[in-house]
Amino acid sequence: MSNGVDFRKMAVGLRELLTSAQPELSALREELADLGKYNDQLNSQCEAMQLRLTAAEQRNAELETALKFYADGDHLLLADPDEWDTCSGEPINWLHDAAGTASVEDGSIAKQALTKTTESGASE
Image 1 (tube, rainbow, N blue to C red):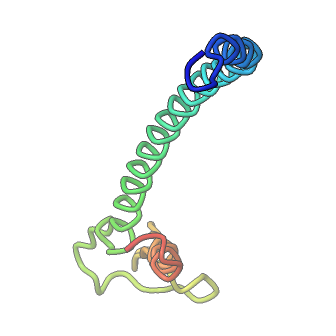
Image 2: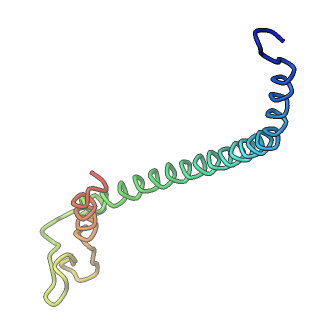
Image 3: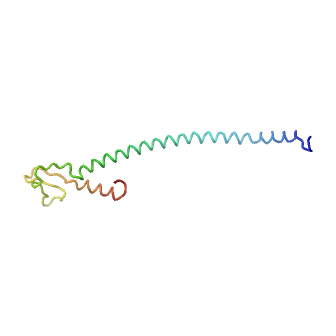
């Protein structure tokens, strides 16, 4: 005993305290390991979702490019534009040749779809 302190009693008390804390420490270690596994699963799911998002964004860009082709009228190869006109009783976006042998949509539907996309802010 030094200065009235019983180091033996103190050591026994600390040992008991450490012993009683062991189950809680073990449980916390297990919980931490479980959280690590859960974190790994979430990271894997996040990576998979990012790949799907990237693929969807690429597909969207490809579809928008195709839609723009029609919206800009690039699909129309009219040798003589004066030979094409709208036809009574038909929608005005459909052009018919003067001979009555061919019809083609002028790209208005694609243009309208692109306008809706731009207005919604989803794409520019």
